[in-house]
Image (cartoon, rainbow, N blue to C red; front, side, top):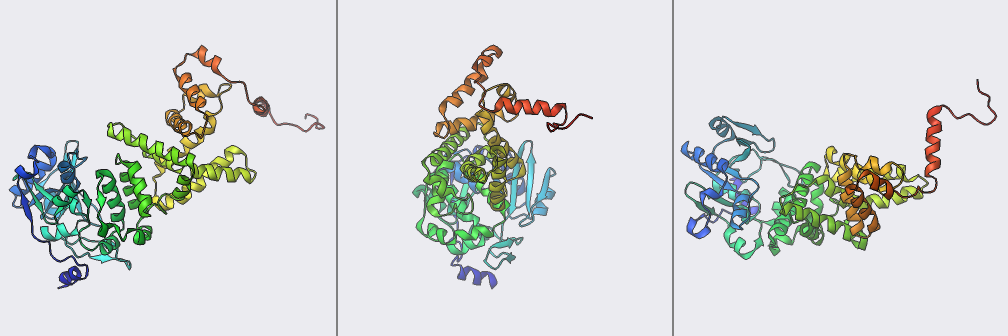
Length: 443
């Protein structure tokens, strides 16, 4: 009774019934899915359970993309799955899952979820939903039609309850059910809509897109760790430049990356961020490693620059002013995104290296090239120079310095800047003992 009432209120109704699509129509053979996911489905089916490869993996295979991982949905309870697979572990609090281990592959197995959540907050956000349901319930509970496709590797068929195949053909991101209600249940779905649209090049269907700008503030009610997790997926999707542009167009960037509009209004700042995003996208598409810390450092650099200038304007010396600026920006940002400390530490090292890289006299350059984060700092400097923020010859100098021998490096050093030798002499005197006033006599 309650379930029917909620479906009627949310205008979800029942799923229209599955359309079973054979291999000769969708083209995915069982060999296209990973060994672990295939074996998981086969084993559960042998034990009398239903089991399907679901979600993004099916979507990506149909789009000709290589999935990063394969998830399985089943009518077996988490405890049953755990008993079937010796090498598995139960995880999760909001909704119990099972990780089944096959060598280096981990298959995430979820039990079909009921449409009714067990606990929500005053805004409608789902806090706990450890209620299991049927396959039909599970399809309704999924967010977008293109993610609600169920592939059976044994029969090589796809079950499609919500015309996801049609939306794939039409290149459309469409939410299942009433958009407002679904976004209230989980505001992260708004970010996911943007991420999927950017990744696939699809349009967000009008009914799905319309409430986003109005409901965007609800993201502030989501735990920062979940926002960070989704933002990292978005930025490391290989389509970060397109995704960030869509975030702005939908009004979703406020509070996620503060002052992003201000950055993009400055030609130098916009150029810098765009170069960083494009470089990240190119590396991901080439299967090269990328650093989330580097990317977040790039996105927030111009906020640090602005805070740095203000701190110096208050009379602080450049280096203390820079560290104060870094702390101020990260204090604001980590409240919103919960960027892990292991990343913020690297971000600060990259930022702190920038003024040091502009000093090319004395023994500083020799020490700097041995710094653990030199390469990241240098790559960051290259972006600054390419955007026009710093003179191009600085990056060129460091490129040559890295490739040169000891003698050539010595010949490349610049003359000390005014005041540098004076500071060095003071440090040497300080090491010998206390500096006495002129009229004081030694003891």
